[in-house]
Image (cartoon, rainbow, N blue to C red; front, side, top):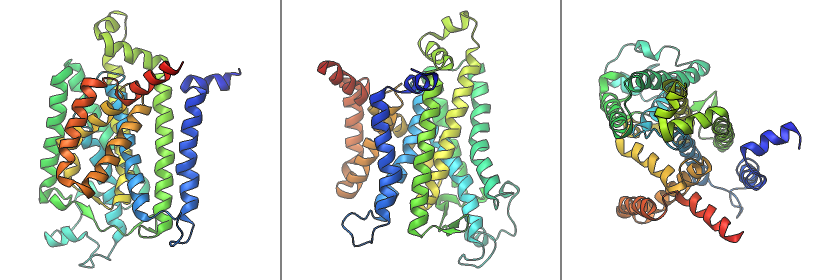
Length: 365
């Protein structure tokens, strides 16, 4: 086996590569080809399907980010929704500038600013008319917030349930801040009524398919990056910190820097997921920062299986697929189902569905 093949097999086994390659081919090749069929063709995929799967792929990237810090570093965050939302708002600011004078008031300012009698953009909207600068904000804003927050938290050696509580307080505080009209982020309505991205109409089926494919590609790259990290020496140190941080410190490792790096990287991945989510869904508002959303992210990872990465993808797909079905057919029962699912997984599947799959495979051999 050559060195290149050895690197690939270190990331995933042959069977896993086959499964992941098949899923990638289905999402990135077959789905776009089916979108080229006439709308009345039985195999044509509707805009609703593209939106649903694209949205789930964004959530899957958030689940990857959560698994990176919780599954491999032992850091349970109940505030990852704030990083997702900040990335979404950074993209939303650019999309609002792309509307131009096509809003209801035909002003270069967004409609909500005209309604509130604003005369100019606030300073933090500077550069939001540039796609490149907007993408920098998508990375830098969640990353800087996570770095500053993590630096003081890890320096103070806050861990366990105490860390989880303050992350939940963080996202709750930002949610309250963004609900205020005077902050310049649209208040409780947020940003919506987007028209185009990079000059392409968001209502065009081709644009929707393109966003779908880009989301799938970035999700695949995020998975490979996370897998490369956790299978490297860095990942082994993370596991040591998770299992016995005191011993890792005694061995000479600066555990604070390791945790700070993976925490910041996780926030950046969430921000990118949020930026991909907004043009597909067509709205971003402060409800994305609600503590309940951040708790749900942890449920995705627990259901799929912690410290597996692929389990995080599976959990995000299963839970959000079930949520879509329940909210259409039995909307009043969704929260009961989610609670029962989490309790059942905690009691009977502590390693999630990936643990169940591993037991089944061992039983076959």
